[in-house]
Length: 457
Image 1 (cartoon, one colour):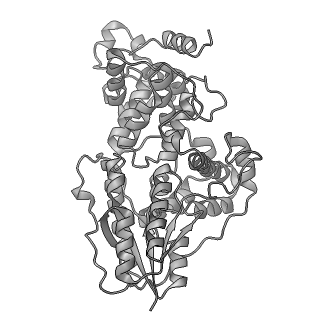
Image 2 (cartoon, rainbow, N blue to C red):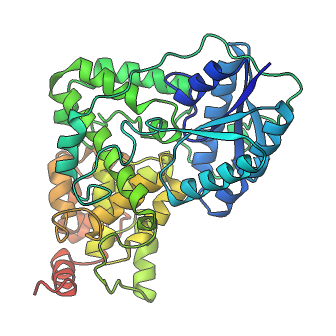
Image 3 (cartoon, rainbow, N blue to C red):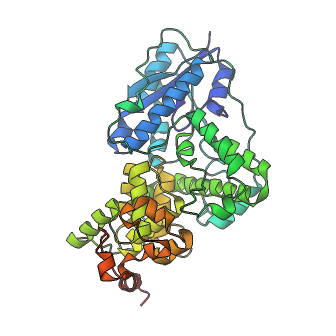
């Protein structure tokens, strides 16, 4: 009786799972394994919202395996040590897992490969599991990755995608392999009140519903702040409860501008993953060093606190930051506005904002989060690094009646229409009715400061 191990990481699903399929083909029995990684917890990446969503994902994965005659084995500790132990207990000759892209994932893979090799066992790493195309699948002449999105998108769009795999009908797990408990969301403290439900079942339900009702209009409505018309699939892509390859296939089959716009967003995700895979230090260091003299000191610290709490005095920014705290998620347009305000209006280091987002975002992904922050801050891949988003102009454009602001900044609910974006312009007597702070900074003064800092004046 031959045995293989499947190590689940950011691929917590049964549908379209190449490592699981390969393990089932190569062995009579399979150990589906998830390890709560002590090293990951030590980095501070195991934030409450992601831990709670992860608990949902693992419970759903275990249920799916049990429906097929199997079960999920859960262990805790050092990944290399736990996998090595499981492989020895089961007499497994191979361990299958999905390739990662971050520096952490690459180091984990090397350690695991070396540990298994020392025992005469083999690690099989599978590409195109957490992304549509594997990082490095397409590269420009003379470089190991694309640094500009548009040429990457053109090349990416021409590539043939691998076929989608169905979920297995049966998974046979060897007897006698002990497991720790599958975690429960209820045991996690500090979770956002409005955090969404995790798991493959929920992810597939959400995708099916949104594909039917929202995909066609995505091109026109993805920036609509009050309409909330985005897919909200980013947490499921982060945890791998949905396959990006399957989503790309399904969206392309739908055709139309909405589907094309959604596929483009999947490509953006791949773009950031291939940048990080080639430049792992971009998680903490400027991708394109600018030697910015970011503001520090008491005033900057006070402004950072106000930004985190949604008290900047700019309603659309504050609405986005409060949505983050309540839901553990933020609308994409809100993310752009919040990041631009911190890095260019307040001129604060992008790493401060990226860390705060990772503390709260359920979809907090090192590639997408860090590189999107760098894109906005002008230290990343943006070809217009000095663009500054005006929160008033952006608010009037993407929340024209102010409904998004009134939803998340209830103290301004009494201000009708677009005037809610500039409460400081109300008459003094009227302003006194609203317990809302004055703007932290004048936008014109902040823009002048930014341009001088960047050497544009």
